[in-house]
Image 1 (spheres, rainbow over the protein chains, first blue to last red):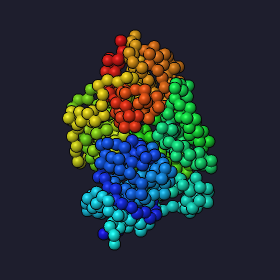
Image 2: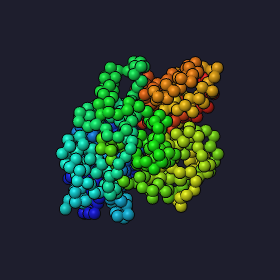
Image 3: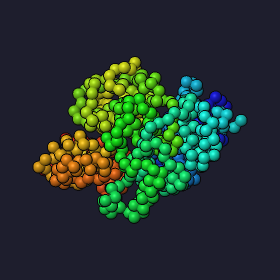
Image 4: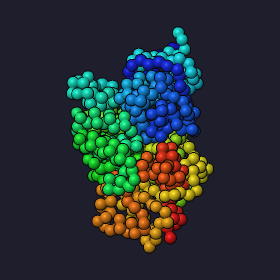
Length: 139
Length: 384
């Protein structure tokens, strides 16, 4: 399946297995950049590694310092290969811009349903941010 | 987003790598917020100063960035991790790395304010002035009470604004976004500032928009209530502004049950080993209140009072610091509760605090349990 018409937030290409959450993420409080996992036991991605995945989540929340966590993930080799948000926010956009992680977003009014039900976890996904296209599964 | 020729050149790297990365940040957040252009800002407030929040990677980023970037507008900075006059038993590794971060910011020409309440320390520009504030309580407070226009910036987006003097014209810098669509209706009488913090935390979670109307708590707030509310909103969501009244269409109810469920989430202990007051840092109004409440009393546990150096100096001049210190409370300047190494899980199991924001980060990041109580109750229960 191909989803086109996404908004490019940070350009580039990235692919990996879909890591999907319907919950927002507070990157400062919930992500451990050194080990590259979500460390909040209440989050549905608890203990899931971000490395190499296409991270699909609604948006970041909370601390403004969360932007540095994207950069730290990159420095520790634990960054996701691409990010798809339902509504990209300033923390995600600025952090990913510095970490060179491609980001697109796809508002729900465009996708028709939440990203978390549109894209099944574990499927291979490629993101071409410059052309605003997501390819899900093998084509 | 349209860039001017000069902005395009800077983005391509013609004015150095640091400015190019600043423009990359501005373009990405401009795209995310649907901006058509960049506009000048008058003041940037940058977060990401405490070594415990940005770590080694952040420290190295700033060291490099500050080699060829200089701030071009007034730039103030968030608290660092500790009070340099009170190193206690903090590790030399922490102290050295914190010093490196401070040096990087100073090299860029920031005001070494180390405060999360810049709105209590510096002169406020006229209403309607565009600024770029990363600290979330300061963004919410300044949008809502001072009429300044800032998005809920990230540490990196405010840094980009500080060295370019620009920010995207979008979101809360536009009047149509500042008018809230959603209202929260408060269904019970608030007893203390803690209820305002809980309301803020609830509002941030419940509202996806950038602004929210709050109905049922009157049409004015004390400084302490406004700070608690702003910090709560900033912690839990992406909302960056509130207004008082019922201007929205969609209504969400905030009753005792909702307040209790936030308490259940954040207040994870009955009692604590120490007390921390702050987050946001205390201002003169709160220090005055604390001095009055602790008159002739002594804290039975260690009590840390976090405030900015500037407020501490003002308080010292009018004899407030001495009155508070006679109760046994200790001032910690230039730092605040969230992720400070003073509150370490190796030293303490649990902490008593009045701040919803402090409770959230001490639970999640400092990994200590938290007993959440309002200031009056804290003084009543923990002094003799």
